[in-house]
Image (cartoon, rainbow, N blue to C red; front, side):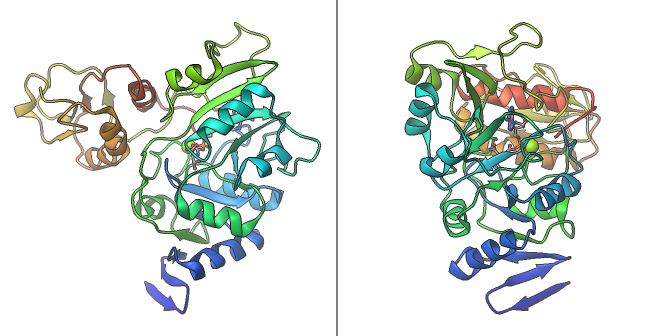
Length: 340
Ligand code: TXA
Ligand code: MG
């Protein structure tokens, strides 16, 4: 059912689809102020937003997604000044923020005395994950709302992250109040997450900003957090093995295809036997990792609809953005357990 109203866009199911003009942004900010849930575009993926200072609103995010409450949310803010009201920025964190914000980097830092992000959004941790997105609609919304917006990816827990408003609605129509529709997310993969604690930088999640990008700014290695090996390392509750998962089994590093499989190819050379596959989608025929990142979630969703025996994924180089793509693919292929 579709209903229209002045300045409101239209209603599909129970969720309002807002235009991204001034009226739409003003409506989205008003809804956030009333403790409602509003999905919005960022340059990485669509986020499911709520007022990060309002624990009842934040509880709504966990309920709508079916997300375990031990997994903290990223607080999105309009600029570095707003971030510094929420978190303590040591020199390392400050240099990363100054270099990469606005953009696809989340910094996990100790909470500041002036911080207002509620306990539930931080899952009770003494740190907060902060990000200043670069997407113009996200920036307009954050500027207008004036408070931090807690936002995980706008999918049901464990599903593939949404890069289109239609993906948000496929998972959450009727469970959230509104979505701002700005077309396709540019990067297509979630932000890189780095924790800055006690003068060290820890690698929590690969993303569009590569390890090299980070290390070239801080002038030292960013440390890996292997469970139990470093007692000073920050907790990383989001590093669950199964995540970003389609329902069809995913087979990695496929160099040979079996009949009945759907193929997710990469580069000019297709895996042997690809001619027997039900469907082949190529992440990037020219082997361009940036292009591959943009296509990853859309193609996984497409191939998941075919009821193939498996999605066979061609090998993808582990350099640069390839680290983030392979990280998401490994989780898509892992046995399904707890997810976010
Ligand atoms: O690109 C993105 O990061 C998107 C857009 C919407 O900003 N958001 C996103 O959120 O991917 P989500 O909730 O799907 O993933 C956030 C990750 C989780 O794995 C969570 O555990 C981690 O960030 N995180 C958040 N706060 C943290 C903290 N204080 N300490 C450690 N990890 C934290
Ligand atoms: Mg997510």
